[in-house]
Image (cartoon, rainbow, N blue to C red):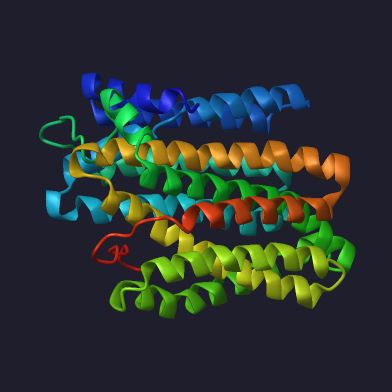
Length: 341
C-alpha cells in the first residue's frame, strides 16, 4: 500500500484525479466486503490487503492542489494532515462501541458504506478541476525524494509523526486490556475515551495560542512530547487504577492533539515551496508506516513481555524522539493552524 501511494499519484496525472480516487475507494470497498464476510483470519488478511491497495492519498492531495489557490494550499494540506491523524483517534474511541454493538464484521460493513459515501460525495459535491497539473508544492515528485530525505529538519518531523503513530497504535493494543484488568468493562471504554478526548482538545487551545501568538512553538512542541512520555510512564506505574489511567489518558491526548496539529504545519512551513508536496508525501508515508510498525512491534512486545511492557516501549521511543526534537528548527513565524482547531 505504501508503494502504491506515489504510483496512484502519478497515475492521476495521466488519467485524472477523480477516476483514480474512485478506483481506490472501490478497491477499499471490495476489501471491506471480503473482510466482513470472511470465515477465517486468512480471508480477513486478504480483505485488509485489498483495502490497503486503495492508496489514494497522493491523488487526493493532487486534487486538493488543483482546486485551491496558492495562498490557501498550505492551510488545506495541513487540514488534511490533521484530519488523517484524528481519524486514527476517532476510530480507536468509536471502535469498542461499534464492536460491542455490531461485532467485527459490522465494522467492515461500516467501512464499506463510508467508502461508497466517499464516492458519492466526490461525484456530487467535489467540483472537477478545469486542469490537472503537477503541483510540486502540493504533491510528491519522484525526482525530489532524495532532496527531502537529505533534509535533517524534515527528517526530524518525519521521525516524529512515525513515532507518534507507532506509540498510538501500540498503546491501544495494551490499554484496553489494562483498563479491563483494572475493573472497567470493555463495553464501557468509549465512555472514558470520549470525555477525555473532548477535554484534551479544550486543554490544547491555550498552548496553540502560546505557540502561534507568543512565538513559543519549540517550547510547546517539546512540552507536548514530554507530556506523552509522562503519560506512558504513568500508564505503567498506575496500571491498577482506573482513575490514574484516565488521568494519564488525558495527558496523552492533550500532547497527542497538539503534536497532530503542529507537525503537518511545521512540515509545510519548513519545506521550500518546490519540494513541499514531496515533503508532505514522505510525511504521510511515515505516518502510515508508524501505525503499521506500532501494531507489529506492540503485538510482539505484548506477547513476549506482557501488556504493561508496551507502555515502557512507547516511553522509550518518546525519549528518543525528545532527544532528536531538541535540535529542531522552527519557522521565523509560528505555523498557521488549520481553521476549526
